[in-house]
Image 1 (cartoon, protein in one colour):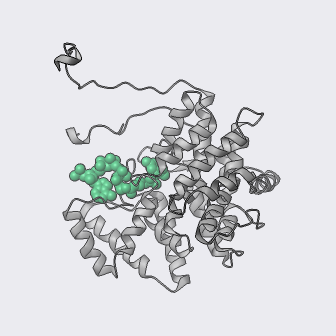
Image 2: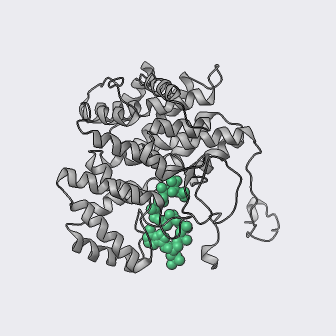
Image 3: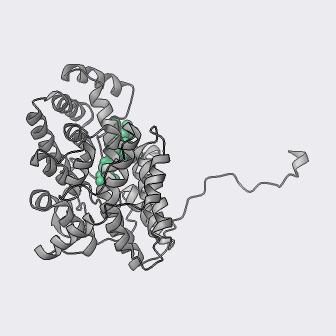
Length: 373
Ligand SMILES: CC(=O)SCCNC(=O)CCNC(=O)[C@H](O)C(C)(C)COP(=O)(O)OP(=O)(O)OC[C@H]1O[C@@H](n2cnc3c(N)ncnc32)[C@H](O)[C@@H]1OP(=O)(O)O
Ligand SMILES: O=C([O-])CC(=O)C(=O)O
């Protein structure tokens, strides 16, 4: 490894987990032993959340009760709606989520007989309410009813976003699959950061807001928004190829490509790519998909790099009518499950996470009184 490539805890085993594995060669992604492909094909997001949080698949009765429980959390305390109304329209929606979670901590703290699991379910259930109440209020001063809709998390999100019941069952399914794919990924940066916070015996909300803040960066969850900005820059695939070659010549990072663990492909990318194509064809508009595919070809040819989950999520979300600034918050809606499972696992076998550093600073110095410096 070159000197420049040191750091970032690359390939360091930083602990144990029973929640998910990306496999030894980074291609066998599974949650609690279930392949991501089986889950994306057969499960719902609620079923996946249950699996991650309770450690096993639910029975039909348990799933029904759990889905209802999550739906019972859509109403927020009046003070939270008031806080959301105070946040200006230029606030990044990730800041909105972080702030609302923090505010909720003072109204529904962990200490008052609420377990971390209770709060997890509360946050999964009310995240769309937080995000879309703020979004509509800032966009057109409208105070939406956040309890609307009978469906699960994906249907609720789309209903609040578009102010109507989702017309296309395929749209709900596509978002549901995306939430499954985004739910959990071992010791990624935001999960690891949340575990560090949990390891100090801090409260659950602090660990979750740590996760939100860490996910926001474009090298991690923020890459889905950056990927959309990239794709939208180009008028057609040839334009994209030319633009990309110029960007690579300038040594620019192409967001939505590469991965710390995977070296050949991200197993989640094929699944979301298929959905991106389905949604594009359904919309009768393949422009973004075709541009994305050309970018993928150029990245493979020029850099031997492959799209990660964030890349085709961008065009898929676009066809679901999700504004780009809400892409990373949708990632949060899903990843709360993974973060929470890890916070619980960390607490169950806790030892404070505190690595050591290799000191490369100055040799011991002679103290100079302030007047002599
Ligand atoms: C759901 C998720 O969070 S997935 C990750 C989302 N993030 C992104 O898509 C951001 C773009 N990708 C990246 O920045 C990186 O690939 C990361 C952050 C995902 C992984 O980082 P690292 O493991 O540190 O990758 P590393 O820097 O070692 O990459 C190896 C080489 O490939 C290059 N490279 C890696 N990704 C990219 C990229 N997206 N565009 C251009 N070059 C890249 C690096 O510059 C480096 O080149 P060098 O050896 O000449 O310096
Ligand atoms: O694992 C990582 O480093 C990033 C990632 O793909 C995720 O968090 O889903």
